[in-house]
Amino acid sequence: MTDDSLEPRINLESESLQYNKLHELGNRAQSAGLILGHGHHQGKYEILHKGQALLMTPKEAQAFLLALLQSIETSE
Image 1: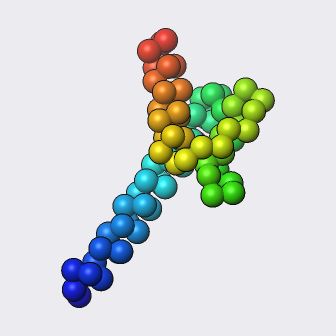
Image 2 (image 1 turned 60 degrees about the vertical axis):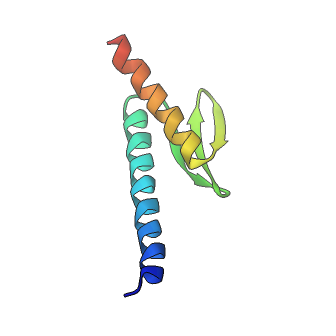
């Protein structure tokens, strides 16, 4: 394999890890009752929170979910 053929594979694996982490965070937030649901929608990541459907980039969604989860950890 050449370096050129490794780069797309590495990028794909990196995206897959980010995708898995985002879903794990969403599942944790949903289990904690912080959100009603989450998932990919129209090329963005959708989070159902406080009666609203929030559409954001995966990076924004990850930051949002982390902040929600940290808010309950600090209040305990």
